Length: 244
Image (cartoon, rainbow, N blue to C red; front, side, top):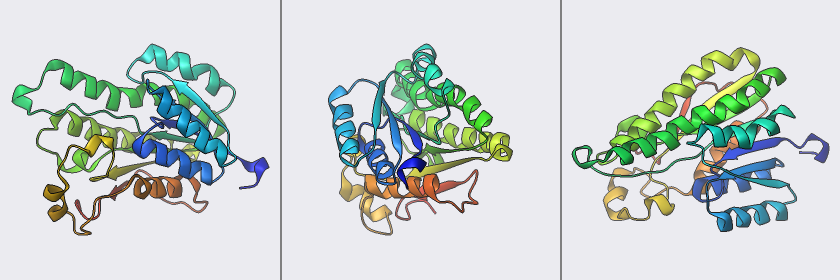
């Protein structure tokens, strides 16, 4: 992109793992960034430094997406001055347990961050996108939301909910030139999956390797940058064949 054409991407949950890779990939494509995170200031400052080394600006915005008031306070004034060209919703936590042993907090905390957070953020950003009559929204779901996963009833429910929400939103805003799509990563090597034995997962993956955060970032980057894009309301699996 030429400097005068630089666009703005808002990345929700952009300080670590998949979010970090998305931030760096979009910065490499010339986007200025707003990167949100909850509390890991060190990781956020590291991403900011890496983005700035690529010649792009990066504003860090710390808040808890599960809290509507915090989300409004963090984003409302910013979007009044203009819509981001891209919204990537990547915020997510897991609190794995079998349903029969799952606590109320394990259920509600995952749904609050993964699904309620999408509502809190999107409601803040959407009006400015509709006013601008342009925008791209990419939601990071999971293969667990497509297939279900034992021990992850809460996580699977939240990620399946994101797919339904994104598809409905796509029907609402498509005529305003706002493209909404979902990426559904499978087993991606991050901090969140570090406790899972690879030898148990690899036999389930036809490509016979685990995915990387960069594998996800490349697809998100395509959905955010491709000029001739006729993909809308779709779920794109990034899973090495785990889910077909």
